[in-house]
Image (cartoon, rainbow, N blue to C red; front, side, top):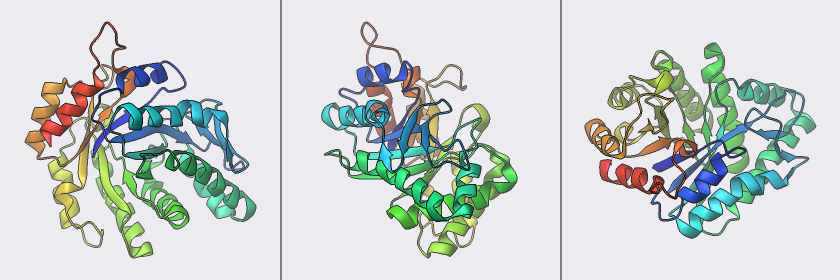
Length: 291
């Protein structure tokens, strides 16, 4: 994993992303974020605003403008190979709403999966993209974390047979995230979750990736073969999501943690070249050097 979270694409983030991508070595594009704003409608929105990405089993022009344009730039002028559709965010009820729709079943559930499928296929059809998966950024009711994350993962895996990442941040919820892993593995008999994108800033400040890896290694029935290679820290270049890390500091952090992968939060926070130097190239190379 050499990833970057592409955020704010409905605002200035799209322009910043397209300016920063050329020459970057980032391989994994995490598109932040997909939302299901209602438990009675199958529409999928971009972020917490009103922009609809998919409805009626078809993508809208916003999917091409906000998501596909970034990925096309990534494969044409960068090193993009994998795309991750990030579900959820702070202030979101996406997982609760998806759970309600899954419980309802019938045509509503079929419509939701068709809408996810339309977005998934639009990105997978881009020449140069090797895989499209989902990143599970659950920031809702902690009591429901394990069951909701597991249930949504299982439903999407059964539909798309793709890979997943989990995105934990609060240390005290570590056991819940491991329980979600265990539920997915016990239900499917295989583990499609290939890594934790672990926040190490803001609400995840103080997280120690090596400690998380040790806990996963000691937990039974997770389906994780190599816990040391499973936890990928997210480092922040956003001054409002502290601690902020320069590229040189990223190298040292990742070496200290012994990380086998990492991601950057978040591209919209990078400067807009010119006259500034292109920064995604620096952070992507820092991740290469650190891992």
